Image (spheres, rainbow, N blue to C red):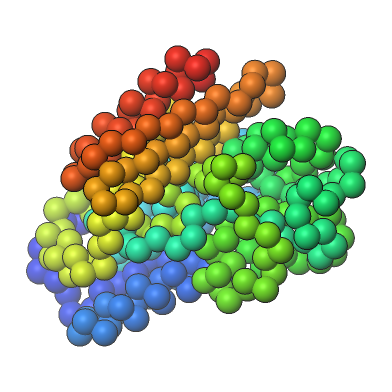
Length: 309
């Protein structure tokens, strides 16, 4: 299906969004900003395959693209103009005909510990059950507490919290950004330091996808661009792209930018759990997305020298 590339900006910008509470918050957040700039904006709520398949991990049913495919179809068919995504859910290689037009200011990229009984991960008794369906989190949790029993945890944010409250887990690990955006910060018992739980590439950042060739939308979205966040996530996504990053690979990447110097750290875990965790870090001056991506490739080279594959 060839995406629509109509040129004049329509009177109303239509945002394609998943219908989960967090996804709707993100879409309404973008809607409010665009409306404040004088645009008329409508929402097109959709249910994706990723929302429907809850009994298997993403790594076994098609990966992150399951959360964006239907939204891209709406863009291609001209039913929507833009799609708002949690950037960590966006595949590293965009399909032909689509592009990332904007990365907004990033929320807290770290992971959060959520538990009714235990203040931190280290307070858990031996063999306690922790919920997460992220292979990245599984590997990093096992590095901290090899004794833990890691059980799958799928569903939207409210579903995951409900499963915790029902006593299915001693604690769960969630993205701090989602909890903060939905004013659920009171559920956070502890936020992991990135030294112990390195975030996923793009975690905490919102990305806006459009059909390639929509210069009108690029211009409309320009005020929403946060360059510092975009440079950081570009480096992170370059690591994941070069490593073939997907839900089936325990891979973490996190970058920070201070005074034009970007510091990027990455970690790779063996999916089988037989090889030790491999880490790498690099710092360098960046002034463009190409610079950031080049730094990401340097980290990948270090990861592979350390045994990552």
